[in-house]
Image (cartoon, rainbow, N blue to C red; front, side, top):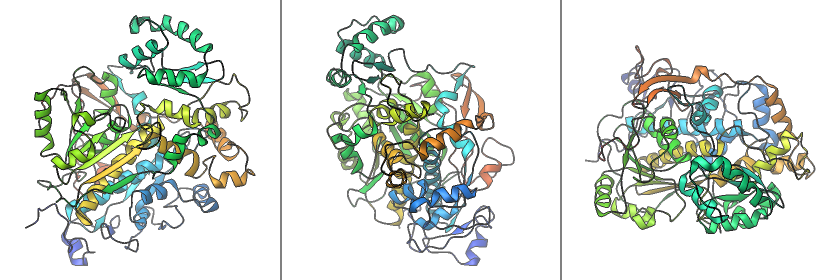
Length: 592
């Protein structure tokens, strides 16, 4: 007999009224939707909590205002959620289960950052709801409610986290924009080894982080005499991180952009026909109890994805190298729900321990540039050979193809290279980007990181669903920050480089509608994040953190595992993580 977690053909069909009532209040009721998991787009769906029904053809599901409806249909452009859900291969009819709570003062930007954030959280929540039904053998899809306040707070989680009242360190003194002889360059030197490589590339001595404030003046003088793209190449050859700030038009002409644009927003593919590894026990709140996830990621997108899986009940084990543990502040934010261990994969003992973990893992997530981990046997194909039926998530800065595929990168560097920094600078200058002294700008949050993280979690969930409702086999889910940036600049409603925007501006350069939207958002009062923050005692100290934005079902919104009266089950998700972060590397290297 097949394992209990395998969704049978009979379970995939809409249940009869008698079957619905037999499942009890957690599964039945006006907020549930009868659907066929993994079924065709014609699957039935019903109204959400608002009572309104909207299909995916228009790209608008339960709009909170007429303005949202207009934007969702502008020149036929689908909503961000519709675009992302299509990239994930989801049934478009299920988008009718998503409703939105719109709030002012959310992620003000010249670019459609709020649309990106809302869409990424929406499809992640919908993918979680879909898998929960598959796991529970239910044909009733719970509703998804996306609250702008929760989304914006989650996208600022890395800035809002506090340990005993203290916030994490911001960018290091040598991580910033620098004026060059012909423009600007953006460096990233938060990690000690990256700082050392930057200084070495510039011919400077490394006197340690304590001297970085003094070193910044010398770096500024040195870079002012060099050309931006020369610095980019010199630092890259040394293994450091520096990117010339480009305009959107300059990035469009770059061969890496061409490789990025040719890739899907989320690539989900099957690599073999291996049997699907079973999940033991009942699904639990969120539907992922029994799922074992090896987390080999770094700031920030990969840890956001695995933090989401931990919220939904997965046993997530974060693995770091002993010589490069994560920063405490970052760990406090992205380690929610997870366990943390240190493992030297370059040693025989470390490799043997990893193989023991891999033998019963269901998901492995990596967050390094393609090929960086291959020497440790962590290439996707190698992992799947040793653990048939595995789902592998692979996230990188620049993507798996193109001349920059092997380059290191972070959100801030991708913003600089792709033209986002230039667009945001023009917004701050009232649309005038002609001044060579205009300081590059930045998005209101690390939106490429957070957005890619939720899209990656959604891709992993959809891969797990496809294994159980479609064709068995190992799956590879790939995303890149640069492709998410392309989505923000070119495809989302209101994107300044979209065909619709260019037609509306007569083929003009970025500006116009996006700039107007940014000005309107900036005039709104800033969002008060307090309703979506929580505090708890932890081994790190008194922890303040952002509550999750991902969720589905109705019981979870009224109560959760930590709240009296809550009745969460597989038909809804927890509204908080089941555990707070422990010490970095403080957990045993084994599954629960």
